[in-house]
Amino acid sequence: MKPSTISYKHVSILVPVGDCSLTNIEGTQQILLRVNGYLAEAGRDPLFDVHLVGQYEEIRMKNGLYRVCPDSLIRDVGCTDLIIIPSVHGDKTKVLADNRLLLDWIVGQYERGASIAALCIGAFLLAGTGLLDGKGCTTHWAMADDFRRMFPAVDLLEEKIITDNDNLYTSGGAYSWLNLILYLVEKYAGHAIAVTCAKGFQIDPQRSSQSPFIIFSGQKEHEDLPIRSAQEYIEKNLHSRITVDALASMLSLSRRNLERRFKKATGNTVMEYVQRVKMEAVKQSLESTRLGVNEAMDKVGYSDPKTFRTIFKKVTGLSPMQYRNRYNREYV
Image (cartoon, rainbow, N blue to C red; front, side):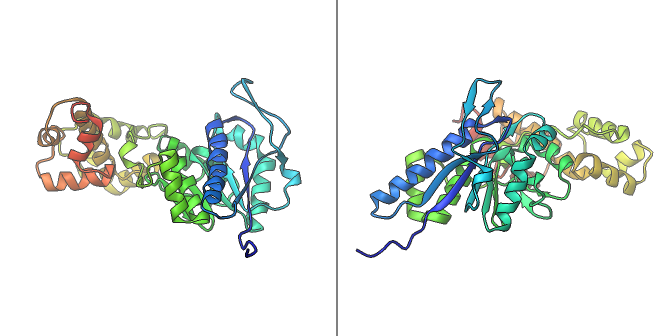
């Protein structure tokens, strides 16, 4: 028998302090250990040496309802190959402060060659290390505004399901963490094992965008009152053709000043905001009414079907018919 040429990948699934996602922790552990099982069934060596790693010997979660006891402490892990950061809910400033030692340890491990994967809003912890500065990442779309405020140096790509930059990985919202774990399984164990894993855990590997799931509500947590007035005007006049010049005149601002302030306050250009608001109204019509696509289009002031469909697909990642068929109960 030939000697094994495969070495274990030491995996550190972090157990941060705070209201952590137990699903991320236990689910990742379960999948990676099952991958070892799939490899054994294929006559191959196991690959993942999986550990729960934290700052303390016991970490209480969900108001003390659960206790997680890591099998390794960060001070005892000299070197690891892959770090998994789960979601941690609650006040992100407090979460970062409570896990400062963990963040420093992550940086040290990355400098030694470790890869790091942040699941969903675990991206806040990864961004808190500074390692994402100047790089692209994703997180739950509902937390996009908060993320941009806290980490302006990071290029947030909220429509993405997965990002991969310099051995730093992030995943989109909620259960899209499964897609990132599957992506890492394929990277380390190969395509065939990843396909087996996808089938065994019923993970859809075709998901590539969060766009169909995003609910646009507009960023209004700012102090620029004229810009907030512009947002409210746009939202109340869906049927109208709204131009930047008309808004600037209404607010007694120059076009350049309006565009600069609008982008700074909302993260969108004026016309991006107009399009997103109109498309959100169309989405609601397609989800909950019997209106046809052309009727829904007319309700928000579009007269050119080709232009409308191009914008709708850009925003949602789906055609209007695909969207209706996915989300309207009468068409499911």
